[in-house]
Image 1 (cartoon, rainbow, N blue to C red):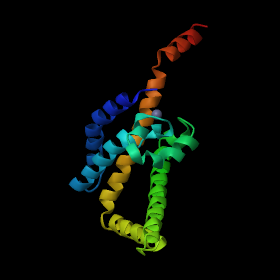
Image 2: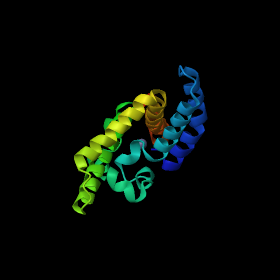
Image 3: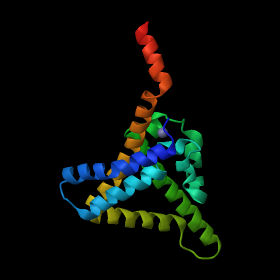
Image 4: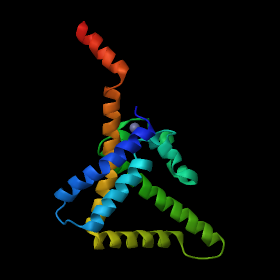
Length: 181
Ligand SMILES: [Zn+2]
């Protein structure tokens, strides 16, 4: 399996190429969207790709916030389709992150409520998501670009793992032995 530094080099090297492809296939040629795409691609490649399913550099990159990914790290088998599926990996991480933000917001607002400031955890959190949904609706192209960048980083991570495994010296020797039989 390629190490974190290999994944970082691949992510940074690939970003201009992937961005170039994205720029040509997107229908709007939207600069803000291209920036969103690049931003989420780099951030997801560094700290939100498949290896969050183990005690990896990606996991530790979250610093004190890595507790968010602890249940994911413990529950998801390393390199399974849940974390390393080309499409399912990124999709499940996006949904997991949205669910984690919701739970943390509810608990934080509930804590603030206990201190005497009455925001109402349910109302505050649903208001937050309503604002987010409105922002996505008003900036659909950029939101879509951010999502595609996030997904592309996860897919590139999996592709790098697959190539790394295929090029492992042990595997090559095994294949040579098998073909010699
Ligand atoms: Zn991996």
